Image (cartoon, rainbow, N blue to C red):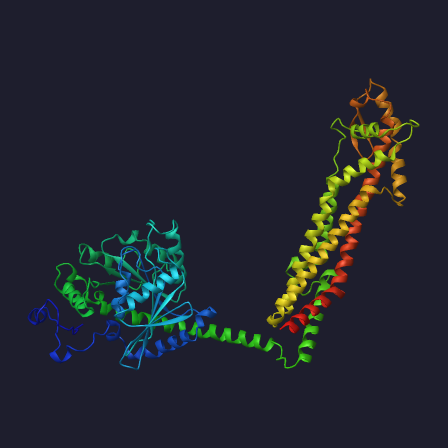
Length: 632
């Protein structure tokens, strides 16, 4: 390929340029502005495809999850990524020691009708106009605003829009260079942060991976190669750019021709701009290097130079666009159909207070019917696959767990050697001056209160857990019915939360009252109390015989208790009979207390839920909305 380069300010004279077969333009071209190789390699036949993608990008279709073909530049730290990018675009980017690129730099090249170029930075929803001389400083300032003034990185992108006449519509993304060892001012997990950013950009199959490699390293060991191979195993969308070829020319030909790392789109070797070289001088130096170097000159001309890289990228992206465009069109149509369905499902515009009020009551009425079905009627056809919304079943499960927990809190002293010990102690302390065969009621109440205290927190925890679940379901149903009315959601949910908090507080107070009543009142009209007590007392005579006859076993089997250890009772007083009677009374009555608590809480909850759904919720929400409207 024969190229023209300006000779002004070059250390090579016209004679030396001609000797190497490179043309030098005449004096009339000296004042012409240098055009980036990307411009010279642009092919008019692919212009319609590129313009189509550019139009889609301007429509922000990527925000809808539709990926567009994009050139993503990756490489290890200081591999020369940014230099390659600026050589392609003809724009100077920031240079420094360590990580130069600390945020994803999205460079958009756009064709511009005016002869004057326009440069602008876009980030944080703002646009900053700049010039070519100031672009490096402007990028640094924007980077510091995004990622801070240290050496940390950020995944928030910075977009550089380059509008030049004749520039094709292409997008290239320069990502932070891969580094494993954090330097001062960088987080310890800098490698993981950079890896996550790179994987996010190179994973979409529409991305063209421009993998920048230094000629001084072993390609298979490069981290950027390993990353690209994870998402592009065949290399069909990976192009390798080899930089710093002048520093390690030995064996480079073999590296790029044997392709040990499966680079499907091939290799291009380049020599980047050094120091303050102009782009024209850099390309001249590059062309001379690949033409005259004894080793580098053996590399095929189709694999060397920034102009070749530029032309290759344009052709690759054009092919990628042609391949991806049918799928992009399909996804756009799917999104369009989805949006049309959402639009058609939206309610009509409300033009009056009357319309708004009618709609509000329709929404709340529909939500009320849903809640009645899932809470009160056990119907869940609206949520067939969401078991958390099968409320009657879930509430029954929670009630059963509550009952089991109450029973499990009752200790079993049968085999522990402590059977009747507590009863004996309480009777001893509660006795007074009177007939010896009377069981004091005080002793019964003391034992009852101890048992109630052991389970006092369980009903409170249960009622709180139950109301938390009910609130979650109610809020979920209201959100579902308010999807099309976001302006009503905040006030509705606020009213619901307030109502739930008030209802929960009332329930807590009611449960505490029930627990306190069980402590101080020992009463039941349940006929099972006397029947079951009498049944247990049938065992008393046999029990006392075992205690009195010391030659017999110390174990006795009692109905409802199993085997009981009684050896410790043989040396105790005659109050054992009273203690046995007391034990049976407390045992039977305690079962009634537990059942009464479970039944009372179940009825209380069902009553409160029904009251909440049928009356309180509608009243509270309407009051909140009406008050909010008046306040506005």
